[in-house]
Amino acid sequence: MKNKQAIELLGPDWEKVSEIILKYHEEINNELDKQSALTQVIYLDKAIKNLKFIFNLASEMNVNLEKTDWGRAVLDIFSISAKKFKEAHKYTDSLELLLLIYLVNPSNKASIAYEIAELCVELGRHFIFEEYFHDTTDIELLMAGTLSAIMEGDEEEARVYFERLREEHRDVALFFEKDLLFTNNIKRTIPKTLKNNDEFFNMLMRYKEYLQSEHIYHILKYFAKNPVNIRKIKEEKEKIQSQKMGMDRFLQSLGINRSDYAWNLVNFGIGTKDDFKNYTKKEVLSIDGIGPKTIAKLEEAGIEFKEE
Image (cartoon, rainbow, N blue to C red; front, side, top):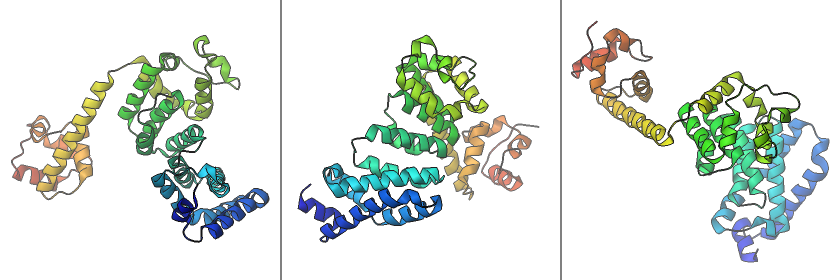
C-alpha cells in the first residue's frame, strides 16, 4: 500500500494512527483473554469504534488491507471482536463487523461468508443474506438462505432457496425426505451418495440445532417431497406484492394509512376491490385491524359485500 493511500485511509497522521492500531492489536492478543467476558466486549467495542470507517474507504479505493502490518492488525482486531461479540450473544454487532470485513475482500472471504450466513439464520435476517449471497450455488449457503427465510417468517422465499438447492445438489434435497434422527455420530445418518461430501457434512454440523427443530425439519421435509417450479413461486410472490401495493393505495385514498391492514386483506384473499364481493361483512370484520369504521368507509367508496 502506498503512503498516499494510507493518508487517504487514516488521515495525515497515518503513521501515528497505524501505531495506535498495532498497539491495540498487541494488547488484544496479549491481555484480552485474561479479562472477563464483559470486560472483553467493552474493551473491544471501544477499540473498534473509531476504526470502522477504514473498511468502507478501503472498499471504495479497492485497497488490500492485508498488505500492511497495520491493515492485517485491523482485520484481526475486527475478526476477534466479531468472535467475542458472538460468544457474548451480541449477534447483531458481530454481524455488522463481519459484513465490514467482507467488504474488503479478505483472503478468508469464503469462511467469513459462512459466518455471516450463520448469523443471518440466527437473527432471521434473510434480507441481508439475499443482498450478499443471492446468486450462490454453495450447499451451505443455499441451506442458510432457506433457513434464514424460515426464521424471518417467509416460507415462500425459503422454498425458492430450497428449490435452488434441489437444482444444484439433488441428493442433498432428497436427504430431507427421510425421517431423520440425529445422533452423536451424525455421519450414520448420511446416505452413501453423500458420505464423502465434506460440504454437506459441514452444513449439517453448522445447522444441526436448526435441523433438529421439529418445526423447521417438517418444513424442509415438505419442501423435499413436494417440488415446485421456482418461476411460479416468484410470479405468485410478485402478484401478492402488487396486490398489497394496490390495496395499500386504495386504503390510503380512504384515509386509512395502515399498510398492515393491506397485508391482512391480501393474505385473507382480498387482493383487489372486486374481491370484497366474495366475502360477507362478518368475514371481513374477522380480519385483524378491520372494524366497523373501516367497513363504513369501504361502503362509502362503493364496495359491495357478499350477502350474509
